[in-house]
Amino acid sequence: MFKRKFLFKLSLEVLAIIIGISVSFWLSEISQLKDKEIQRDRVLSSISMEAEDIKAYCDERMKIWNQDIEIYNLLLKDKLDLAELKNIAISKNRVEYNLIYHRDFDPPMNRYSSLINTGDLKYVESENIKETLTRLHNINFTKVKSTEDYEKKILEIIVELISNEKPNVFLKGNNSKISFEDYLTFLHNYIQKSEKLKSNLTIQLKYFKSRVSSLRLYSITLEELQYKLKDILNSN
Image (cartoon, rainbow, N blue to C red; front, side, top):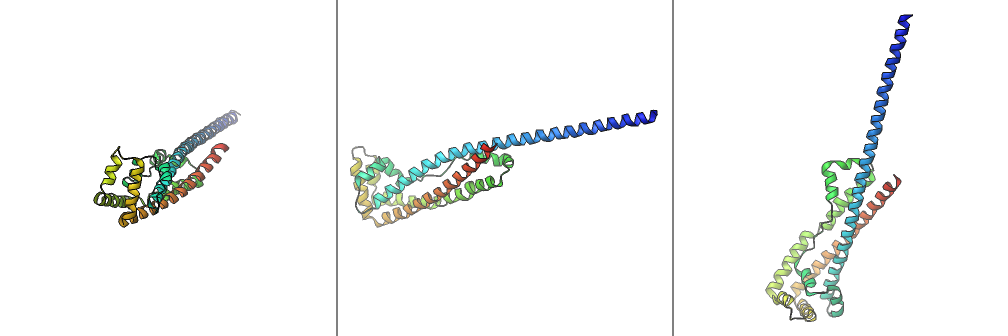
């Protein structure tokens, strides 16, 4: 009788231990799942905030790049539309910038880069989101950047041509006594007379248009990412 009671008591104790261990594992699993969910929301929110910053950057770049195209178009036309060019270019510095400097494409990607470096991107469970991120930050980003080296080389040629053939283009640009209208007229006449300069500006214009087309594709992918992020975050 004593032995039977002892075995029964022992069985209850063993059962209690097993239940306790099971409950402990269950609670631990729930805690891990909750932590994983918190981390996932944090990462997705971070990507979403950066996507907003990238959109603002791309909108600004699209506006400026399209203006660059219009300025080149107007300068390359046989007849100068002075009023239209003044409306777009605004100042001599704006026109000169197009002839000298390259506009880089450097959207804010610090958050994404940090997630890659820390490995926190693992918390993004959606393969669809991961694929879109890869397409945006790798494939489409590379397409926008693809003409950069060619643009820089053409700019170097343009600057060298102007410096050798008509250095007073830059001098007139810095001379406050020369009106904006006179500067534009002088520059347009020079472009029309210089086949070398006109051909290089035409090539540069093609690069500008290619870059804008690539940026449109980049922006479409960005909108796709934002839509998917919004759908997931709103469903939580």
